[in-house]
Length: 145
Image (cartoon, rainbow, N blue to C red; front, side, top):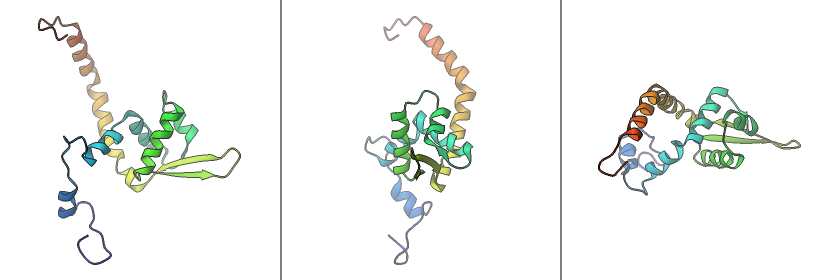
């Protein structure tokens, strides 16, 4: 901790930025582990669904938005997001209890990068699918296909 006693450096300060950058190619790099979590399809869908809601969503509403996700996978995804400080969880005491989720301020900073990645995927998916089709159809003389 540099600076005045009781103060913490902020992300973006040169000292903090330099000290927090790791080696993405190291399997134990914290940044790599974080990218594994935030880069998953369920994390992307949960964050973008919560952003679109502009507020809280109940667990059941999120599950409905995220076609194909199991209850267990959604619970694991939301728990990881909550642990990372990207999502807040609120339980309403009712019968049965209602559980609500919303993005934190930190979670909101993830929305634009994920929207950009989604836009890239949607723009280039036809070309990528074409490339996959061509690759799969190719007769590979080297025995690798």
